[in-house]
Image (cartoon, rainbow, N blue to C red; front, side, top):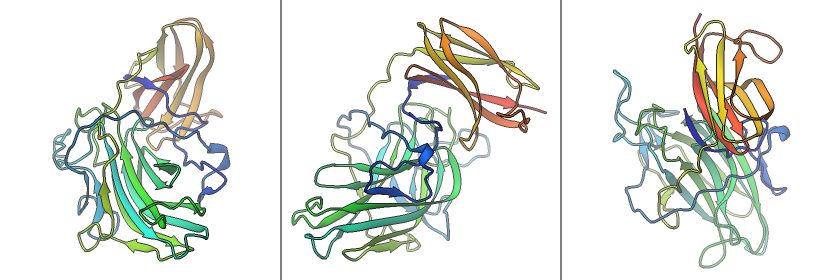
Length: 327
């Protein structure tokens, strides 16, 4: 279990996001639009870039761009070394020029990824840079997916281009992680945060770019460093904790919670893909208590055996625990 400030202000913890009227995310349900994340303040700390072309779990073909490192040791016997660690803010960037800076430019980007990140805390973003906004997130993704297609679109207006001649557009693929629960501490064993492949960037006002990394290089992509360096800000004090007993369980488990003051508490169950299974508590509490989960979804259907997660959200703080249902 761990406690962190809740960063996800939406019905589901795992939605893509469309941030403004000029930013469109393909296939993102309107009901799952979310408030943009606020990155922690960063302090200077130079280190080796993480993004590189590699054969490790390549999405398609032999090579993908991998945001991960072989320096992250194996957490499970028989599992090869390789994964992602704490305090990531890793940026892979492409810059292109528009034909006419006096005209708008619609930028479209598509890609395919494998992703293996701790849901609710560690993220993959597709972002752009404008003259007014140093980093504008078009969409983000989290949790565990293989061969996941992503697409987003952004309209640059005259005056929003960047570069020395104010005629450039910038696309960023970015991975962030917090200070724990990753491959470094083996609380979230993983195969690296993201493998990125088959990137296609098109411009309505200029020449685009595509790259599949099969030449073993990052192509025209460059590793960029965040302003101020790395290292996340310290977490906020805990206000909630959640435990389950028995665990593993069959057919029911008791989920106990504690809070440090009266307030609203929501306890939800998610599967490994980050899909909501059931909300088992949503209301005002005065202190600790216990609720039961009988292994059923909303509507009463019984879930299959496997790993699930319980999330307790108490007034902006969240604690997450793992549940194992055996049959």
